[in-house]
Amino acid sequence: MEDRHGSTVSLRSRRSQRASSLSSESSADQEVVRLPALKRVPLPKTPYGRSRRLLIPASDNLPLVAISMRADAQFINRQDQFRLTLNSLPNPGVQQHVEDACVVGDIVVLGFNSGPSQVTFLPVTTEAPRRIDSKALPHVSPPRMSKSSGEGVRCLAAMNATAGSVEFFTGGHDRRIFKWSADVQSLEEPTVTKIGAFLDSGVSAMAYRHDDNSLVSSDTKKLYVTDLTRSHTPSPAQFSNYVNQIHVHPQIPHLTLLEMVMFDRRMGGFDKAPCCTFGYRNTNAKFEQSYTKGGIHHTFFARGHHDGTVVLWDFRNVKNIVTKRQSQLTQSVVHTVVADSRVVTFGGDAVTFLNDFLRS
Image (cartoon, rainbow, N blue to C red; front, side, top):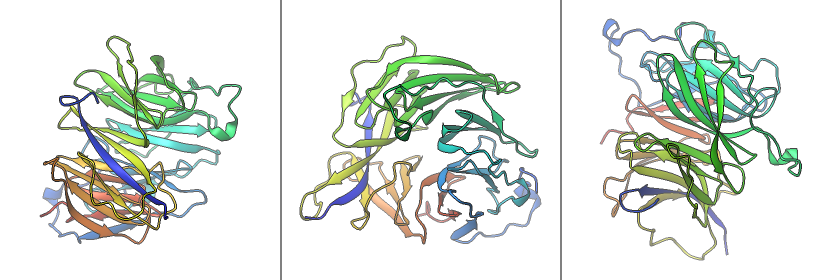
């Protein structure tokens, strides 16, 4: 019997069930140059510089931001697809461990498992980048929990951004969830409010649903939905497999996608997929990183994997989900996003643009 580890994405609809400079020059002023089908942008190699997140600021003229485990930040021009070397922001020499990162408007938020700060802000502007450490330290480690089990922030979820403020959530190893509200002029002193949800174990993933002001969260095997208007969290839904990532569809707010790890020990193949699930299996993989994350674009879901395989699924017909494209990269992929109608991956020491991946 051979262990087969894979990742599965589950679609859940509430209608059917419960569950140079950082700016880019205007393309109108430049000669139109056709980009290659695959463009690899190398990043500096650093000790312990594992990939964490590739983030897309809301403003189209601002670059992509690649965040490593040790809190290095690299900026990649979205149009011409090159690294902005003069704006590299390496780790300042402080031992930090990035568990997760998200972007709220044009402000990148880093969540730390260890180090002097639990949250650091990185505003993305046309000026030179700078870090702003938050003074708040709301997540605490229970006395019976060893530090090897983790402390501080475990995951993040963006909520809202306005011209003058940002709001987001942090989920901790301490099983608590906090809402953060920060004025863009004083990011180091945010207002932090505890959310009325206490999970059975550390918070593994979260996503905010704008249409009903609720927060979907998980402690890997249970899914919680917190009504933020009423401050109420009903009994969670139980899962047999681990929930690693949660997505709320940006265009279809009642649709929630769960990235799950499936540990299947049956002999033979997988000739019958469960309804409304899809995924990719690498039979040679020893594990699938819990940090691995995909991205949604309309009816498409793109995700890279530990073996370098990048898959694009079309889920417009949930009864017949189609693998639309598949590509093989030379390095493992941790985060996959869709930026400007292009699939972009982050893994190893590179950001890779798959420029034709969404084309028929």
